[in-house]
Amino acid sequence: MKLVVEETEGVTIVEAYGRLDSTTAKEFGDRLIALVQAGRCSLVIDLKNIAYISSAGFRALLIANRTTLERRGKLALCGVIGEVKRLFDIGNFNEEFLICPSQAEGIGKLRA
Amino acid sequence: MTSRRPPRTELTSSCEISITNNLSEIARVAALVDRFAADHNFSNELVVALQVSLDEVLNNIISYAYDDEGPHDIVVRLKIRCRNIEVSVSDDGKRFDPLTTLTPDFTSKPRVHGGVGLYFVRNLMDDVIYTRRDGVNHLQLMKRLKE
Image (cartoon, rainbow over all chains, first blue to last red):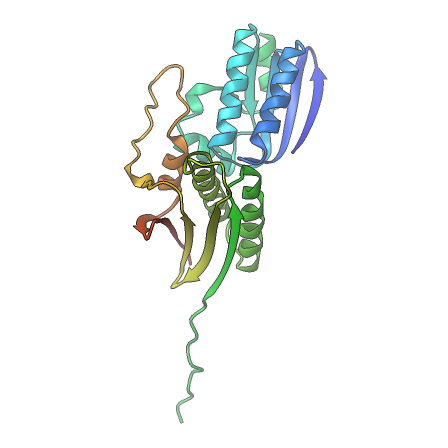
């Protein structure tokens, strides 16, 4: 799966493309954990180009979130829209993450 | 003179794929669903419902249905009939009725992972029917096509 990783103002932005499912979740999760272990503990993950997330993908996001918190970092999500937003609602995942309307607001929250 | 309509032909279309019990095989099913959806102009909402549901069902079968290490076939069929899309999944694994699983406990902290996958299936599909015949699990997932 395609991830575009950028660093802005000490915050790492990860733009994810494609699907987060049984096929891609492991690689996605491993790459997030690698970033956190490399000390990039302020992460904004932009999901606006993700078509859908199955429970395997949510699991990877939950683990990345927990790992970031354990390192006293912060993880924010943005681009939670359309069908992805619907899946967050069905699975009751909205309370589990810091969800921001845009990358800029995610960066702002993490720098605060 | 009354003009006669051409005989009404029911639009029926179907396809089938057989995979083995390896998680990497799920991508082949996803590709087939994409092609089937494109051929029939499915909405994005419908494609997502089908893809997520099949991902959950197949992941569950491949991860938990077999006690041995051997290869097993899982057959997935897609069919449009009477303005319904019907998906059936057949496997020769352990007896398992996904409709008997409980709604996940959304209040537990930290959130436990289990159970949300099949909860997605029940929410995204209009109808889910489980039967077991001759040692084979048959799961039917149905979604009504919107006009």
